[in-house]
Image (cartoon, rainbow, N blue to C red):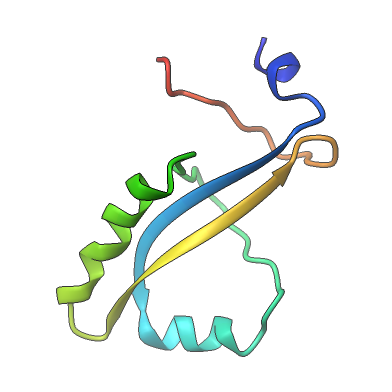
Length: 87
């Protein structure tokens, strides 16, 4: 059912998270590179929702809040995904 709903579409998704500032520095050294996740990843279609999670890092020492903008091309992705919004 969802395969048909998203077929041929490009999705923009957001993930807000905290990460060590050193990790962010490493990512900045490689602009345009890919980040791999080896586990379940929770994202939102609403930027504002993800910003709530990103802002949680501002009060932790050596941590920084980041907003990841993830583009998913459903025509080329081989990674399974599901919209659990309605569940």
